[in-house]
Length: 307
Length: 125
Image (tube, rainbow over all chains, first blue to last red):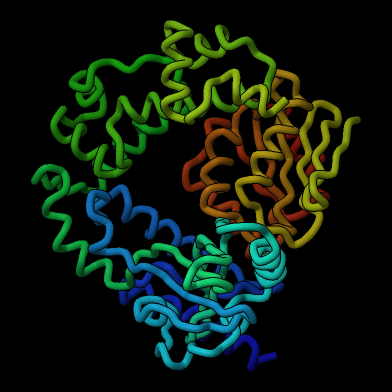
């Protein structure tokens, strides 16, 4: 019992070490326990997820030129599912040497919870016709025993290709060296304006976001008036809010209106005209246009899909 | 009383003007399950607003996307919430949810036995 707890505690330690080194992709393997240690594991995993996600909107990751900070995850499997070759970056991502993984069966580095799905989907790809592709989420087990969830694309090559019979697993993942890259890139973001957010500013931006979330249908005053209402100035509110939430105050308002509208469109029978009014849009046509731009589907398509 | 089992993972029903959501096994809530819950809840509620009781005791994990969905879209049509979190793990999920408190009363209970008094407390508000 003690040995098991010690092992679980070591996993938490390793995960924190990975995070301290800038690797936010790994996760602690969860157990079926329901104790304090399990709560701590869940909390550390959630923290890694949130920080990883925050990197995207904080501007640390340059979306215009992603190949500088992302590693291409590439593993080629033979017909038996054994690893023929893989990129150095993939091996490093899994914390292995490349030669250690070559020749190993893919299932030996996958977590048990995704093996059934893997067998099913890879089997389907191999039994289909022509070039078959499919996306799926896989959870790899790194050398240090941590989980690495990766959204992968599986590509199976059939007759007529030099890769016939091979299955390729590919994905893009943020490199563990994000912080170094981030420092180099972050100067280019936000058009050179660097706003230092103080603790009291965070509370103000959070109050504004709460106000919007509670009643997204109520229009906001001008940015200057809003800033004065919360004891700040227009410049700080404009740049600070964007730095904290990744979008401007008015984009946030529109997003919250559309989120509320989505719930009403998808899960109720309320007429669209009424929904547009309930969510603060003056004209139904404007509402429909914004809805399609945000979700990629019109309200009618969403409702038909859910009925 | 309408009751439905959603994919053997969650039971959801409306009883005496209260929505109950009880997870059936040691389950990870992903976006698909979260949207199924909200979808079925909205159908049950038929445009009305009700308090909701959510038993977190069998929840193993909640994905990032599901957490965000439940904290936003998942709150529509709810007038108050009672969470049942008897374990440290369930408590983590409750605290995580409460990081951005919803715009209504939320009560934390450590067991299902306390539900009746909590509902009474809600009615007094």
